[in-house]
Amino acid sequence: MKKIFVVISLLIVNQIFSQELYKEKYRPQFHFTPQTNWCNDPNGLVYFNREYHLFYQSNPFGNQWGHMSWSHSVSKDLLHWQHLPVALKEENGIMMFSGSAVIDEKNTSGFGKDAMVAIYTGHTDTLQTQNIAFSNDAGRTFTKFNNNPVLNLHQKDFRDPNVFWYQKNNCWIMSVSHPNEHQIEFYQSGDLKNWKSLSLFGPAGDTSAVWECPDLMQVSIEGTKEKKWVLFTSQNSTMQYFVGEFDGTKFINENRSKIFKQDFGTDYYAAIAYHNTPDKNPISIGWLNNWNYANSIPTSPWKSAMSLPRKLSLKKINGEWILIQNSLQNLKSLRVSSKSFTTKIVSKQADIDFHGNVFEAEILFIPSTTGESGIKLAVGNNHFLKISYDAANQQMIIDRSQTNSSFNKIFASINTSSAKIPLHNGKLKWHIYFDKSIVEIFVNDGEAVFTTQIFPEENENNIQLFSNNGNTKFDHITFWNLKSIW
Ligand code: FRU
Image (cartoon, rainbow, N blue to C red; front, side, top):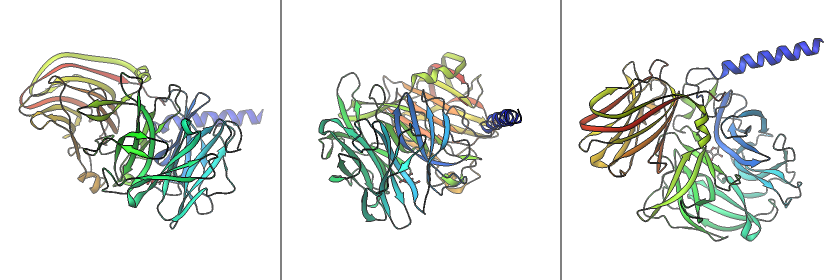
């Protein structure tokens, strides 16, 4: 009897605790965040037994980077998450750096049919090696392989292995980064334990910072049954992608004219994808923070969020392969109420009769051809986030210089992001997700995405349209209040 009472009391306390946990200032309501403590890169994204596994870099002991381990959550719909115990812990002074996970359907490793195998970097100050661990209970517990490391080049920087099953050659392929050389090395294995080098890709594209977190996958071309190979890398605070072919040995880049970015905002990094989704179309998740100030953002008791899961596809635009990213349809189930506005001509400024800090918006408009136009969010106390289009220069700009940045000088200095975005028949379409301290903007049905963090007060929740020179015609605007996933 006493035992039952204790268990019920604990359940109630836990309930109260977790309810309060997701009500803190700045706490995202429909983006993934850990209950407490620091997190960075998503790791080991894998689908198994109708569960999406999200492992991620975490510090189980605090709200700053350190003691890197793999924390673990699962989801049935990529929307609602259940937190599970830490899956892979720092041990014997070796941290668990980023990596991937696969389901060994054919038991190539001998760890058991359908074993979940995590491939991660073991990190010390002087050495990074590739290691494996396996689970026979759907990722609930892992055993580190007793013959680790499985790949050791005796190098200080050699990390972030990403593995998939390559059907054509009946083998595993690993992409792994040589950060300082701006190179990705491809390896092949029949059993996840013995790895043979195949080729190197790079330097190419953006080499302004160390390369991390490679991910190679096949992505569908919109409107066809064809697929192309896409290679992603992360460098300091932005990501790039290359599109081309993988012939079983090497990757051949066909997108060479410029740097292709996965996200044009300030806060999107280290994204990797679920490769083995039910329909085999990859869905990626990125870390929403920026190493230049990541430890200093003013959130507690957690630090950092994950992006909305993004469906990936490709489209050829002006002779180049462009990555198309869109949010998942089931996000619509969070909509609780809406407000729509039809044709609004704005010259100068117009207040919108909708207020909020957890919402979604769709905006279709014809920007003024002579000036800057767009929308201001989180308006109040002389603060606002400005999302605009400069038609003369075909530039879309996210400017957070007028938001609270008192907590960190570097955050304050990295305050705008922009990209060249051509109009479609003179129009621009924005699909905005605003979640307390996160703003994700999908442009023109996913042709570009901007992700940024801001830290407004609760009452900085007004919204304004503006057009600083000439008229801007807002054809259609809809706002939805969204409910929490927690
Ligand atoms: C990328 C990264 C990885 C590394 C991990 C450490 O954000 O630097 O290269 O494995 O974070 O936490």
